[in-house]
Structure formats: C-alpha cells, structure tokens
Image (cartoon, rainbow, N blue to C red; front, side, top):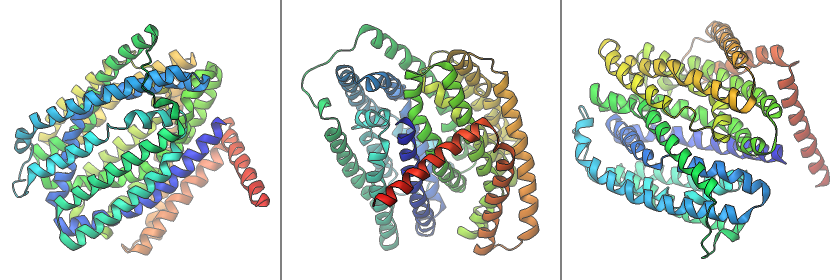
Length: 512
C-alpha cells in the first residue's frame, strides 16, 4: 500500500508539472514582452523578500507533520485532531505576525532596489504579494494532514486545474491590459478560491477533524513539538541566509534588472526540479510511515534505492541543463537575457549540490532529526552571506553564487549524512561519501561524453537543434547509467516496482 501511494503521488505530480512547465514558459515570455525585465526583477525580489516571513513559521508545520505519521498509521483520531487543532491555532497567529512584519518591512524596500526607480504602484504590488502569502496559512493544517496521510495526489488534481486556469487567465490579462496590478489581483483571487475548495475536500475526507470539542496533546508530544520548533527556527534562519539572500544581494549590489535575468535561470532550474521532484517526493511521502513502522536495516535499504534515484535524476538534469539551458534562453527570449558563463557554472553547481541531498534530507526530516544540527544552518548562512559579500567585489554576480557553494560544502554537505547514518541507519557514514564521490565522477564523465556527442551532431540554434540536443542528453546518460546499475540491488528493487505497476495496469485494462 505504501508503494502504491508513492506511485500515485509520483504519477500525478509529474503529469501536473509537465503541463505547468509548458504554460510557465509561455507566461514568462509574454510577461517579459509585456512588462519588461524590471518588473520581472521586482517579481523575483518581492518573492525573495517575503521568504523572510517564512522564518516566523519556525518549522511548526514540519514538526506537526512528523508527529502525525504515527497516529495516522495507528488510526489514533484523538491525537490527530489534537495536532490539527494546534496547527490551526499556530497558523492563525502566524498570519497576524506576517501581516505586522510586512507593514514593518515596507518602508525599507527602496534600499533593496538598485536602479529600480521606474516601478509604479510598488506599495500596492507589495501588499498583493503579502496577501497571497497570508492566505497560504489559512488551510495549511489541512494540507499537512492529507500529505502526512500519503494522499497528496487527491489535492494535486484540483490544484492542477486551478493552476492551469490561473496561468491562462494571467496570459490573457497580460496580452489585453499589460497590467501587473491586475495580473497579481486575478492570481490572488483564484488562489483564495483554490484554498477554500481544498479545505472543503480535506474536511470531506477527514470529517472527524471538524469538531468543537478541544483535544489536548500529551506532555511528551508537546515537549517534542516545542523542541523541534526551536530547532527548525534555526534551520529556517540558516535556510534564508543561504537561499533567500541571492536576489537581495543582486538587487542591492548589481541591479533589479539582473534579478530579472537571474530569475529566468531560476525558473528553468525550478521547473526542471518540479518535474523530477515528484519522483523523490512520491517516495518521500512514504518515508515517514516507513521510519515509524520499520527497523533501521529496512530504512537503510530503501535509502540506498532513494539515493540512486536521487543521483540518476539530478545527474541527468544537470547534464541536460549544461547543454540546453542557455541555448534555450537564446531561442526563447533572446541572447540579451543570458548571464556570464562563470555565473552559469556556479548556478549549476548549486543546483546539483542541493538536488543531491534530497534523499538524505528527506530521511532526516521524516525521522524528526531537527535538534541534532540546529546551529549548523546558522553557520552555513553566515558563511554564505559573508563570503558572498566579499566575493561579489571580485567576481560580481558569480561571486554571490560562489558564496552559496562554499557555505554548502563547509557545513550541511557532511553534517546531514552523519546525523542520519548515526541515528536512523546506525551504520558508518563512510559508505555515503564514497558513493557520493562515485556518483559525482559519473556525472562529470558522462556529462563530458554527452557534451562531446551533442556538439558533434548539433551546431544550429533553432528549435529542431534544441530538440535534437535534448534527445542526446536523455539517451546517452540513461544508456550509461542503465549499463552500470542494472545488476545492482537498488536497480532491481526499482525494476520490480515498475514491473508490478505495469502488471496491475495491464490487469485493469483487461477488466475494462
């Protein structure tokens, strides 16, 4: 049943993202043509500024979801209700805090924008962004419940419909009016409707959570929750200093327009991540249940499978991006939107480093290991901020991305595996780093071969050339990896699941 839910989450997730990616590129092209690069920069900057607000969330969501796995597996409804009630109260309070913080930060916006004085109605734009941020808290407790129960695919279908509708309406608004204000207003209105509808879906599936009776948590769960929230607050601060400051630094030291250029790269890498993350996310949705019900040996065997999948998808992704990202931007919106090559290389390095720790981070979070390294993200964030401020003076834009690389390698790159291997798998962590080194070698070697093949057979800059390059980047790495891994236990486990799924689909077809 756990595997079945994973497959459903993966399938729905990938289908949703393919549709959204295609519409996303169309929307971005029309956005740039209608409003220009400065508005694109403001869009990226305000998204980043509001990520500061996520700090007040303090990890409450992750902590409660972690505590939900066990009662959901045991069918302990009173404890489920108690956790959901705590979550609802917490997020109502957080919505108020975010509103007050947003008002406090507003006067300082001009300090964050170099060469960004041409933006009209900045105050209204800012508070439209803030409003959407606040709305996201209203039903957060319900989304977490259904995700912890491995039923995320139920909402995914509805969310896909709303997101597609939103993108289509935004495209129409841009073409007809060229109004960023109306663009954001329509987006907010549809998001509110989506939030209300999703809440009703969850209420219908879990009717027992709608009760006026107050349920209390036991002392042990409360203590665990408080401890984890404090630890996750540290993680959130560190996370913001690492991932939330790039646009702020670019806007402050270089220009708002450069934020717009960088946002295209972020969009493409994020869209690619969104296509491959459902694979790991679908597995991750079952990890919490796995850890709650199985022993360390079983957990370790599943992790090795997850790590192989993790490597395969992100190695393939970074090879794909190296060969196609810049040619695609050139074809899509023009050569003037391409960043310098050194910045591009470090964007890919950071993408790979972040992607490759997905499996280990999933097991760490699902096991509730929040306190063991609560101060590490602070050091990571400070290293990132200080090194970026220094390196930006010597290398410009690339220096900001170098700071992110440096902070990752000096901290979280090695602390997360050590914690998980010690507390969950209870085996030596040396095998992880050896495996990581092997995977890195394969990525570089296969990437080099793929690039040689790509450059040999393609030399044009049109759409047909992009398609041909894409096919080469899909076929060559997959052939290499299949020939290397097809006899391993991890691959055989994956192949067994695939065959089982195919047999089930074939049986269903015959029944119909």
